[in-house]
Structure formats: C-alpha cells, structure tokens
Image (tube, rainbow over all chains, first blue to last red; front, side, top):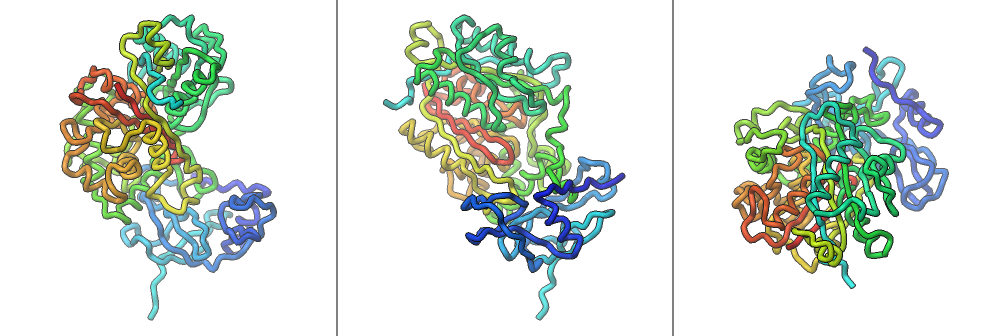
Length: 133
Length: 376
C-alpha cells in the first residue's frame, strides 16, 4: 500500500523541492517573522513575497503522540508509530516523525534533521541529538 | 443597557442519541425543533429566525435553508454557521443580538448530525500534507496537547481519568445517554490506546442525533406564558484560530478571553458558579477549561479534579448528564440543555439550589471557544 503523498502546489513546491535537494526551508518576511507552512502573505504584517530561508536543522521536541490505530492502510505495518511536533531553532514549528524508538522520546529534547525518502518523496524527519562533550 | 438576563432559552428539545439508522440530518433537526417548540409551548408560526450549525460529517451548501424549508418556516434571518463545536453558543449569541436589534422575534438554534450510521471519515481524516508523516484524525491533535499538559504541569493519568469518570458516572443513570457504563480508575487505566497518550475513554463518542433551543426575550416569554424560561446571563467568545503546529503554546487557549467576556457581562465570578457543563470532546479539554476559566490556576486542574470536586456532590459538579463522553458525542447542545435543566431545577442529578451554571463549547482542535452563563 502506497504512503499518502504531499500534493505540492505552486506555493509549497519550493519547500518539497528543497527537501529533495537535502535542505529544510521555511519562509521569512522582511519584518523578521518566520513560519511554516508556505503562505503568500506574512501573517504578522501581511506583506506579500516572503523569502525562503534554509534551516540549520536543529530543533526541540515539543510534544509527540504514538498511533495505535492506523487511519490509513499504509501505516498498519508501522504501528505503533510516532508523530512529533518540533520547533526549529529559527522559530517555525512543524509536524514530523522522530526516527528513534518511541520509548526514547523525552520532552524538550534536542533533535536534528534527518531527511528520509518514502518512494519518490523526501520527508523532513528528525533524530534525537546526542549531545557530545 | 446590558443584555444580561433580558433574553431566555424558552424551550429545549432533542432526538434520541446513539445509532439512528434511516434518519437524515435534516429530519433529525426537525424532530429536535418540534420537541423544543413543544417544550416552550410556542407555535411554529411565531418563529422568524432559524440558526443552524453545519453537520460536522457532511457539510452542505445552503444547509440552513434546507432545515428551514423542512420546518415549513420562511425566516427573516437564518443560515448555517461553521465554527466547529463552539458554533452552538455563537448561534445563541447571534440570535439574542438579532432579536435585540429588532431583526427577528423568536429564534430556533439547532444542530443535528449522523456520523455513527452515516460517514465518520471526518474524524479520521488526513490533515493536509502532514498525512505523509501519518498525521491523521481529530484525536491526534488533542493527544499532542494532552502530552504537553503532562510535560509542563505534571498532570497524571489519574487526573484525566477523573474527568472521564465524572462524565461517565453522571451519564450512567441517564436514560437518554448513549454510553451508560460507569467508569472507575482501573477500567480507565485498562482502556486501550487510540493515539497515546489518549485512551479510548478519553475520547468523545461518535453519535447520531440532534438538539434545538427556542430563544426569545424574557418579556416575550412572559407574554407567551412560557412555563420555564431560563435567562441567559452572559456569553463570550474567543478564537485561537491557528492550526496546532503554529501555536506558540499548546496548553492555553482563548477560552480565558471567552470566559472573561461572559463573566463580565453577567457581573459574576467563577467562584459564584454552582454547576458546570464543560465541553469534554477529550478529557484534556475539561482540565484546560477549568484553568482558563479561573476555577483553578494554570497547571493546577489535575489537583483540582483529583479529590472528586467535579463529581456530583463535589464543589463544582461537571457534566451532570454525561457530556460528550457518555450522553452523546453531539458537539455541545446537550451541555446547554443540561444547563437549562439545572437552572429549572429539573435535572436528573440536580445540584440543590443551583443559581448559576457555566457552559463551554469548543471547536476544532481548540480553535474556537464559546462560554455561556445561565441563571434562574
């Protein structure tokens, strides 16, 4: 069973194309506000034409859930799987998967970007960052 | 001049709750409105406004007009509103403000849906492109909030259980309730995960059914000889609007602003409230509403509910007819109806001498919020 795929629009295609090239990007307005997902206008000052900016891929784990029910057949074989909410160091928040074991997840843990492919789609997943001394 | 106390809920009505095969949502609305008009003792010919909440499981074009047509009413005002489960209190507020402005005289506010025998796909739907990560369902968003509440405040499974137990044990003796199985802590802890940290017993029922309110001025109710009008003392609204990942915080919402407006309108304080009907789509919603309304401080709802405060006989009985976890998963009107019964003194689990009831309605993943204060 095929995984559900994102459906890039004219607006969101740069985001998905960047992931294919190995980068996680977000939008930033000239007023400084940064966000995801893609919009035409800054939700703070309403100016159009935000620019795309590359994230360093460092984030914090805000919260996560573990699915014990598959709402789509493609996920049945992956149960129990997690979906996590992370906050990038640059500010924007996004939903993702943490590739580590569900039991290893800890609130507010530092995580880092790990781009993974599902078929022909590049996804922005994260792994627990192991702090080195 | 304040609207507080000058408008009433003159009648309430509802269909059976649970599985209702063979009924469409329009006919369920008609059935509920028929009972509400009977309860008010008001002739249909007097109704000149029909405010309808959109059926969650089946959005339809011009749905408010379909309901008015089936009721045989050509209203001056009416239509269909989409704001998730908070829409009921919004429509009641709109009805009161419209009557005050001379735009109509007697209003019906109603809602019906049939996701249980119809299509419940809306509750498990993919959430945009994030479905690629497995992000599906309404429950998952609440699970994300539930976990963050545990992280920030040390809220325990027992605290969420206390919310589920209050609704379930209050609903257990309600002959209209869809789920009449009492709940204790052991059963709650054994309840299967849906989306961890949400157990099945944390989640609202999926239900067919409908309900309706008749709204008019207190003066009109007196002229018409309405037997048990219940005055609306206050209402207020607040909308978080942003999708869950875009919120700076997961553990507070605009419910606080909604309640502030309502309490100010009523000239009352949270400590004056005798009984509460709080939107329990998921258990965390009740905990956060208790905090945001000021019944306890932020992060202290777990401690507040732990000692039985929200059970019948406690200092703030909550969801005395079973709420969304037991009576029916219908989003919100059952709570307003139970508030009306408590203020009439006719509730099955009546809180003796209750003079002030707060009702909360909430929509989306805590996107929207409405607060209602009823008196007697």
